[in-house]
Length: 578
Image 1 (cartoon, rainbow, N blue to C red):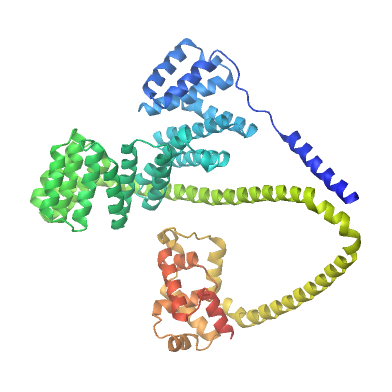
Image 2 (cartoon, helix red, strand yellow):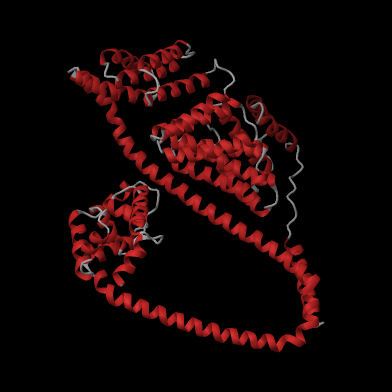
């Protein structure tokens, strides 16, 4: 009976504590500016030009700096969004910079208020837009990711519909465009597909869906995944309803060029289709973009006399620096082949400015890639902890129900009769478990001692100590370009030193492996020696300067050759210890 009273007391205490921690909901101040600002915000999603006009009129009718803090910060956030949606520059960046921490603090103080969470995310997003406009790409990327973190942290996936889904799609689209500008194809594809998921959630305009499908297809094509590019282009074409639109012509242009690249159609047919698109162009920039495509086909066909006409027109008339650079690169090669050194030099002078830009972009690429990698890790941790919290809540409910329905009665009826028996059983189990743990600990100690005695001298070799120092100093990441870690690559002398060290400490290691597995190549044996140091694929990728996927393929090959499901490092270390 005493046990039952204790459990009931615990349940009541938990209920009182949860009530005591509950925070009241946020109540926006009832000010004269609140109603018109709310109406403008509603209009923003449908008619951003009208919203901008109303905001400008509002600023003339009110001294915005004397508004209540909530209204003042909302006004500046809405003005920033309206300027962006009307293709105007950000004129109130400092005010948005102040609005962001204001809404962050409100959202943290009232985590159950969805309107505050959305305002916080929008403030981060607009700060990212402002950062991108002033070429602070890393800042922009950080703010976009922060906006996503706020949304994903405050809303369940099923709640991200309607305007919330539209906001998520817009944020992922901005990230897609940013990584596209840096030709980071894998990231652009990933964020493009995320954007597609949210575009589909709120039934976006078919042209928006088609444009994103085309975007993803372009990056699959540029990364050499032509079948995937073909699939996305076909889906994009199926989305477009207006066959006279620029979107449709762009998709047809890319799909036609892909057909030429895959050699599914002959060159003349492809040129005829693109020339037809050229005749339908509605602007000078579209004409120049199509002309560059035609020029690219002629360039690949080595028809330099014809291509030069197209490319010179593109180079001299386009305002798009990327298109101008591509035209200049091809013209340099054409002029050199035609012995027009002076003209080639002029194009080369133009291209020289991009060399320094490339170095700067390389640094920015590394930083934004690292930001996204860190964000994904934190997102996985957040999902994991949220799952644990939900599971804990379910367990708590089940536990309380069990306590109410059965545990109290069970303890009350049987505790006196079975307490001694259970105590004895627990003691017996503890004794047995203790013995088992002691035996396991001794076996592990013996095993470790044996391994240390046999391998200690090997790991003290100069080349091994060098590798371990690198591993301690650097944290190599999977799926990163191995060229980033080029400075840590092992040269031929170091590989030979590792070869000699292995054969000295583990006699006949190389010979026995070759005899037992004749299909192993010289490179396979180099990988095997590295695996004796218990390295993972990311570390081997950096040391051998091979792509991470290549190292993974090699690892799978070694498992097939050895006929084992264990990692090669486990198999090889076990082999040398025997």
